[in-house]
Length: 487
Image (tube, rainbow, N blue to C red; front, side, top):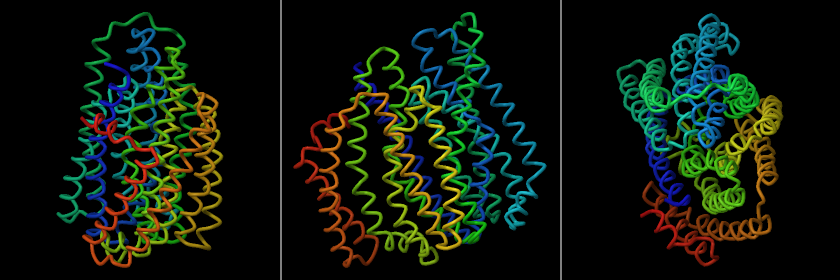
């Protein structure tokens, strides 16, 4: 099977897995937002944000470091893989135990810092999420290093499907935000158990070991350091802003902010699947000396990602008010200006999804970590300055400004690693902006006729049709190629 066929198959598998996960997650978000109400849902989201910060230290970049060396050694010396798995797992268990001890001892103190005493029991229950989400992430990342996209997609689907069912049941039974947290933990526990057992029998027990290279345990830890810095930056950008909103504005503000981010995360799913599929392949191709192949892969992925998501970002800004009103209800209309600002964040996420993870596999984790740390610190500073003045919208502005700098820096690093056709990409970008401008004008005119979910769907469909026709006319969309990939 050719490389393009393999990648196409892997992408379709990952896409289906993520589609299941994202749809179930989106429905769960809407249901929880309505069942819990803006105040309780904000408290729940604040807890999840704090737990995400804790998971930086329970993961420490170890699984991604191990995946990087697995992607390399499986091509040159597969007998080292059991040793990589052994040490990376032991390091992960130690980091999990340390974080859990700190959380059990300090959960009341963390709640008091935010002046939210109702957080304390939620944070204590969240220890289970720290344990099993970390193990679940470890299993999925290790499978990613092996390029076992199908197995990883299955794990992701198991987690999200179970989460959807169990969380809703617990909330309906009256257990509220605490029940939702236990539902999350149960889903992670099942999916992580399945993943770890699969890795043990498939890649640890049955692979013939060679004499361990003494440098491997040290390599895993050393490469985990910049990855940990990157994870810290990611968590700050994605979670600390929610915590700061909770501190300055309160749980309702967190609800507005999280709802807006959830919509953005929902629409980014296809490009996340594509980026995830390609990341280990860049390293494999580089190890084989096929740097030109890797460059063309990145160019095609980036140009098609921008072609799809530039008009989507514009569309989100145009339909934000009707979308929030129809899906979440009038209680969440305060999220509308936030969502309009976050539409730009959606476009930035597309570019970073195709660039950031690839840099870790290409050996540029240290450079990426420095950029991520700087942007994360800048994000915190801007949040502290802007939230007291502009409220939740200030957090959104801070995120867009700092993430823009980070995103363009990652593209620059990819340019330094791969010989990209800059002029070719620029011409594509100009065409994409022209298509988006025409489509946006038509949607803006038609928005006056939107009265409900059906008419909103019709307007979105008209916009999509205009985009498709113009993309074909400009030569950016090859219908025959798309049909052949789907088959």
